[in-house]
Length: 413
Image (cartoon, rainbow, N blue to C red; front, side):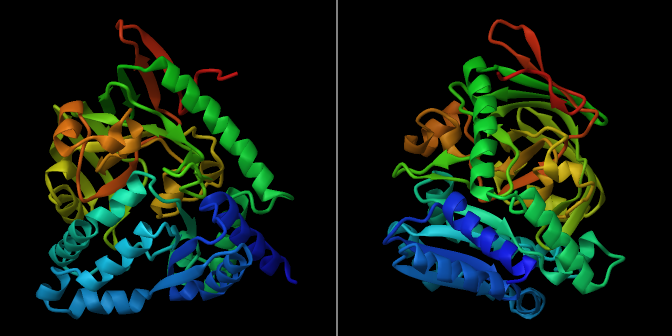
């Protein structure tokens, strides 16, 4: 077996054991691009070997997706098919684990009118609301892993041939996800323990607000009462431990939807809807974006913010030390799964109900009263750097350093 094939086998095993933590007699839904067929076949074989009752693959193809977005009648883009909603909802209701193999071309839809992309995203977001509730409330186990499609690899390594670019990106993926270590599963258990200590420290503190200071950033974020920090592994409604993102270097919690004030500037490009938004800033008043600008992709940013009322508010605040393996690679990945794990970040849109005590059982009215944001979108953007300072404000008004120069200023031991 070649070294690459051996690493692929370890990667697939890690995704199934520590990612979704597939159980015997459970179904598995894999969302994947056709380019990742080699990995999907290994995943399928291993899943059946672990006792899966069924493996269903939802294939996608970049070129076909581009053709549809470019040429289909607007009426088609505005109407997400009910048969697909029924199929996806049926699988999560039956307790399927969800594994997404992810690595899209960041420039895929460049040249397609942003309003067409926006209408399609809105249609799918609204149609899949119930399906997404299973994911965001951890009613099922789910995980996302990367695959270096040629177009993505060439974006990261533009001076290399397609083959060399993919090989380089594979090396980065295997290193960052700890697959290149002797025992990746054990390495992830150790990593999860480190993140557990960070989140437990913050959960005990229950800071009232976080204050951010950095280049182009002066921002204050109130946290909801009884907020919960998560990070690393989490537990499903049925008590199964899993890792939603591989890689993951963050601990994250819930901002108050009405409690964000000031300006934040991005530090890495945001790939959204097949287009890149670069060097952008957002100004908040009472939790809502009231002004914004971007050096490129401003129209795409505008459509993101206009997705619905909740898209102009924050649903997540995440802390990531600047020395994370993703950051240490020195690469910009143009891919949120990776770039968000190189940098402190925030998310526009829907909050994870699990980030507040009792959130999964709250009605929409209770969520609003508690400051829990709701939206059809949830888009992470990177705003951390080696120059970012963060202070936590205690309930009695004291300020305590959390981050200094982009890294932890506290000792969790």
